[in-house]
Image (cartoon, rainbow, N blue to C red; front, side):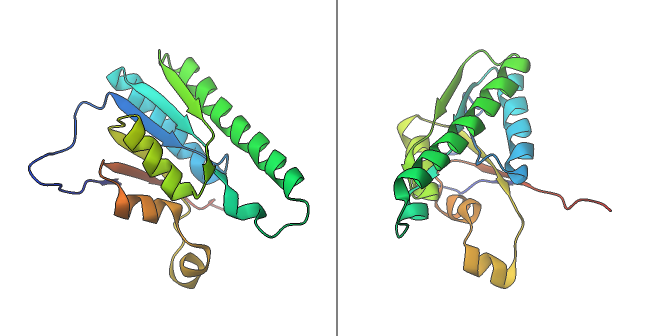
Length: 159
């Protein structure tokens, strides 16, 4: 789904020159990575792969150093996956980042700082109490972004 907010007389910049795809390495992010890479490939865009290291994850942990290292390794692996997919698709310019902080804020800050034209991200499609308790990075980005946000929902396994 593509969400575009109206901001005065300014519309979205098209074609998209800078595509930001977010990933945490999860299955929900995989489809978003594929769609973001396809978008960048089709438009000849610069692809920005971003995986945020959530600083809230180790706030109260005794072994916060080892948790930070583990999360940093996961983030690096996630953006390497974006880079690999982009290379395979023939995307010429790829940038990777693994900022630390609150995920939705880091994504929005990165988009602003790098002049991103569209953000592509996966969503688990949680609803109700589960969404309330766990929060939604995608939901926060969609509500707050000044650029279009394409959310790709993880489809449940058919069984």
